[in-house]
Structures are given as C-alpha cells and as structure tokens.
Image (tube, rainbow, N blue to C red; front, side):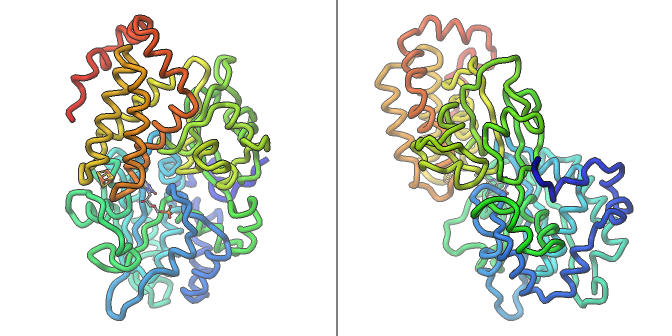
Length: 450
Ligand SMILES: Cc1cc2nc3c(=O)[nH]c(=O)nc-3n(C[C@H](O)[C@H](O)[C@H](O)COP(=O)(O)O)c2cc1C
Ligand code: SF4
C-alpha cells in the first residue's frame, strides 16, 4: 500500500475550507518554517530530494538556490497551474479538493525565496477553481496567514490568481511569464533563465502546483524523512492522473516503490484494463512523452521489472524507455489504433505551436498532414520515412521544448508500431471504412490551416 502525504486527508468532510483544514493540522508547516531562517527552509527542500512535478523533474532545492538576490530588487514565486498537457489532471484535483494545501505550500515557499507577491497562473478553463482558490486565499488572509507582518515575523506576502486564456504554450515557464506580464505568451530564449531575469526582469522561481504542495509535508516531517519515501532519486510521493482504457480512471498518490504492472492492474490503482481487454500500450507521463508497447512498459529492455520511478520509466533512453513527465498516465487497450492516436496528438501540437520557430511551426503541420493521409488510407510507404525525418529535424532545434514534445510521440509511435502505419498504407479501403462517419475527421485536410 502506497504511503500518502499529499492527499491523505482529501476525504475529510469540509477539508476544502479553512476551519476543517486547520483543525487537521493545516498551516503547521508555516509556523515551523517561520522559526527557521529562509536559507534553512531551502536546505530542507534540498535534503528532501524533491524533483519538480511539472514535467522536467529538475531538483527543486537546487532551482531555489539558483535564485539571484540583487539588493533592492523584488523576487517572485510563480505557481504554474496551467496544466494543459493532455492526460494530466492531477493539479486540478489538488487545487479543487485541497486548495489550502497549495496556499500553505506557497506561503512557506514565498518565505524561503523572499517573494512578497506570489502568483498562481492558472489555465483559463479552470474557471471554477479560480473561485475555490480565491475563497481559500481570502480565508487564509482573514486568519492572518497572508498580508503584512504575518504572525509578527515582519514577512509580508500576498497571493494573486491570474487566469490564462487557454493556450498550452503558456505552461512553458517563460511563455507563462510573458503572459503574466500581459503580453502574447511566446517562450523567451534562454539564457537568461527566470532565476536571474524572470517576471518583469526580476529573479523568479516558477514551480508546479504539486511541487509547491509537497513543500508542506517536507517541512512538517523534515527533508531527510521525506527523502526516505521512494527509491533513489525518486524521493517522496507522486500524483498520477490515470485515464484511457482502465477500470478506475482517477488521481492516485503513489510512493514510487511500486511497479508499473501493479499500478495498472492493482485494485488500489487503475484496477486493470476495462472490459477484459488486453493492454496494448501506455503513455506514462502525459502526451509529450514516448509511448511504450506493453512488453517494454512492464519490463525494461534488460528484462527488469519497470518501476514507477523517474529512473526506471526512463531506462533505455527513448529507444526503449519513456519518462515520468507530468504524471498523465494514458492507457491504450488492444482495440486502439496507434496511428489515429498519434494523429490526434499531432493535431494538438500543430494547433498549440506559437509559431516563433520554423521547425516547430512548419513541421507540426506537415506531420499532421502526413499522419492524416496515412490514417485515411491515402499515404505511401515512403511517408513513414518522411515523417521520421521531419520529427528528427524538429527535435532539439527549437526555442522551447514544445518542438520536442511534438516530435517524441511521433518518433516513438513509428519506432514501436511501424507495422500499424504500414497496415494503413497497404489497406487503404479498410482504413477509409474505419474512419467513415467520423464527422470531425471526415475531410481532414480541410481542418489544417498550415
Ligand atoms: C509546452 C510546455 C508546456 C508546459 N506546461 C506546464 C504546465 O502546464 N504545468 C507545469 O507545471 N509545467 C509545465 N511545463 C514545464 C514548465 O516550463 C516548468 O518546467 C515547470 O513549471 C517548472 O516547475 P517544476 O520545477 O516544479 O516542475 C511546460 C513546459 C512546456 C515546454
Ligand atoms: S518550439 Fe514551437 S512553441 Fe516553442 S517557441 Fe518554437 S514555435 Fe513556439
């Protein structure tokens, strides 16, 4: 049974509201942190081994220690609540059901980083969660956890919620900062990194919702104790949002000591493949990470059991492994068509490309067109190699990682399921028949506005 330290209290009636949250130990980490120096709080986070939960898995304590501290210049903490990665909905769950956990984590983190104005940048579609967060902030403020001279420490802090307008690219930290400044959300060229020049050119830390919520148990139990949960460099617990062809879709907290097989088939988690079907493949970390066929998902290429850790999911590199990513665990059963699935993702990335760099702007559109042709039985065998060539030329050649995120799913689908691409080319009539009647796909090329 997985140890839970983040959502362990989620089923307590009324925990969403201040009184119940406080009665159940809420805000104790703020009291504890205020007895420590900001540098000591950063040190605890370093000891915990916490890695960013937004996708890249960068060590949080190290990121915090990079924050520049020039005299007389404000520093900012920005909470990334954009969560637009297909298959990922764990931050929504945290904010909707445990809003005070995030506010508590934000206060401690703001204190550690010296941020007197902290922002939550939230995707526009989460409108109802904005209300929940704003009510929680008001409750925290009226109970003196926010505002001026909090608990007599001399530390001032306000938290503001800013809604995005629904662009996936605004989850990329520098695009997010542009958007927060009121501009079009185009990623910036790095360096300089936000730790040196971030919001309004001031030193800024951008962290994911789950990362900042995890600061609460880290301070409560101490960094070293937190690091004892999990294995190796996968310390602590991780939230996973599981969806697709499984019996029990939902958000699960795991302690990264379980195997992928246990997560998929265990009654405590996904509860197996729906309708008694067989497992075909899975995207373990949100739409950007490589898809893995069942055999490589459950065992690594070396024949070892694949574990739900950062290291094990990545074992084998992209040739035979994948990534923890944002924790969006998407399961496909034996009836799913990988080409159709890859086309859906390609359409998403083409639509979400900000258009600043040509490999991403042009390449995502080309990949979508070629995939549509193949899926609809209008492709050629040479199109598969062309698709491979295009994704290879996008990867690593763009300003921000959205280009990579568009390329990796295509590369992995061809690498592991080339026979399905060939089947569509060699069976054009059957491919067209399978798609007949799907109105939104009926004349696919018309939907491309390249
Ligand atoms: C296209 C794109 C979209 C992203 N979307 C999100 C997002 O919705 N939420 C998030 O926390 N990080 C997202 N990221 C990662 C952020 O740029 C950044 O690495 C993260 O917020 C850092 O927080 P962490 O260190 O706590 O993980 C995205 C990155 C890219 C390239
Ligand atoms: S990679 Fe794509 S999304 Fe990122 S900056 Fe370039 S064009 Fe924009």
